[in-house]
Image 1 (spheres, helix red, strand yellow):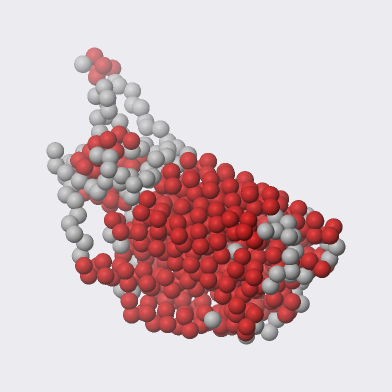
Image 2 (cartoon, rainbow, N blue to C red):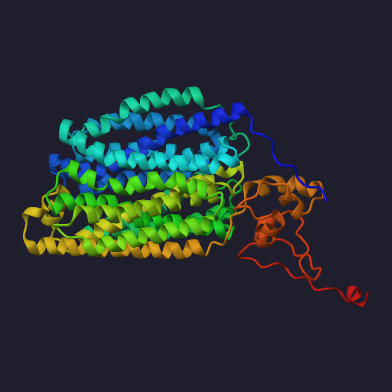
Length: 565
C-alpha cells in the first residue's frame, strides 16, 4: 500500500509572509470592529445633535449593516475573480474616505448615506480577511492564526465603546469617524507593500450580475421588514415592500444559482452536512450575541441616565471575554472537534443572556451586568475560532473567497436581524415620542410606567436572543464530529490517478482531531469526505461508494447472469 507523504518543514519565507499578512488583516479587522461598536455608544449623542427621528436613529446603525450584508457575498465572489489584494486595497481606501465624510455630515440623512459608503468598504475588507489568512498560513498554524484574528477583532470591540465614549466626551461625535482616517491611510500603504499580486480569473470566468442583484434584493427586503416592523407596524407599506422583496428575491436567487455555470454562490457549499450546519449555527450565534452590546449601552443611557463613556466601559466584558478565549480555542481546536467547542460556547452564551434578562432593571448592579456580559463574550470566543476553522479548511483554495463571503454574509445577516429584531421588541410598547427619547438616551426622566414598559421590552428581547442561541447549539451538535480537511479535496484527484485507496490517502496526511491513529479516524469519518477516492472495504467485503448527507448511495440490482455465476 502506497501512502501520500507528509509535507516537509514549511518554507521560512512563506511563514514570514503569512505573519505579515496577519498584520495587514489586523488593520482591516480593527477598523471594521471599531466602526461597528463606537456607534453603539455614540448613537444617543448623534441623535440629539441632529434632532433625529426614531427611524433616522435606527437607520444610522442599520444602514451600515444592511449595505454590508447585501454586498459581502458579492465581494466574496469578486475576490475569487479579480484577486484578494485588489479588493482589499479598494475596501480599505473606501472605508477611510467614507470615515472622513461621515465626520463632515451636515445632517442625519447625509450621515446615513456616508455610513452606507463605509459599509461598502467594510464589506470588501471582511470578505477578504479570513480568506487571506487561510491562503497564507500552513494548516498546522492556521487555527492559531484564526484565533489571533478573532482576538484582534474582539480587542477592537473592546476599544470601540471605550474609545467612542472618550472621543464623544472630549472632542464631539465627529471625532469618532475622523479617528479612522490616519489608521486607514497607514494600513493602506502597508497592505500595498506587503500583499502579493494575484492573477485575475476574469478571462476564464464571468461575474454573476443577476445573482448579485437578487441576493441584495432578498437581504435588503429582510432587513427593511424587520427594522420598520416595530416602529411603523407590520402592516405598514415599508414592511410590506420589504416582505415582497424577500419573498420574490430569495426563491429567484436560488433558482438562478442552480443554473449558472459561474454562480454567485455555489450551492455545493451546502452539500456537506457539517459545513451547512456550521453556517446555520454561525447565523444564530450572531443573532443572539451581536445586539447585546448595543442593548446594554442604550439601556444604561436611556433608563439609568449614564454617560456614553460609562456605558462604553460597562460593555467591555463582552469583547474582553472574546479576546481571552479565542486564542485558547485556537489551540483547543487541534485536540477537540469543532462540534464540541462551538456547542459549548453557544451554551455558555445562552446562559449569560438568560441571566441578564433576569437582572435587567434601572438600578442594575454593575458587577452582575459585567459577569453576564463576560459569559456572553467567553462563549462567543469559544465558538468563533473552531467554527471558522472548520468552514475554511473544508473548501478548496479557489473557493475560499466565496466560502468566506457566505460565512461573513451569514454572520452579518445575523447581526442585522439581531439589531432590527431587538430594537423592534424593545420599543414596541412605547409611544412615538418616547421611542425618540429612548434613542436619545433621555428616557430616565419620564414616568416609572414608561420605564417599566421599556424594561419589560428589554427582558423579552434578551429571552428571544437566548432562545435563538439554544437553537444554534442544537444545530452545532447535529453537525457531526468532524468537517473533512481541505487536503482530502485537494489530493483526491492525484490519489485516484495513482490508484491509492482512501485509507492510504489519509494515512499520509496530518492527523486531525487529536492523536487518534488514521485507520481509526477513517472509520469515524463520513463517507462524504471521500468523494472521488476509492472507498475502503466495509465489514462483510462490501465496497460502498461515497454519498452526501441528502442523497443515499445508489443500490444497483445484480443481473440474473451475475447471480447465477
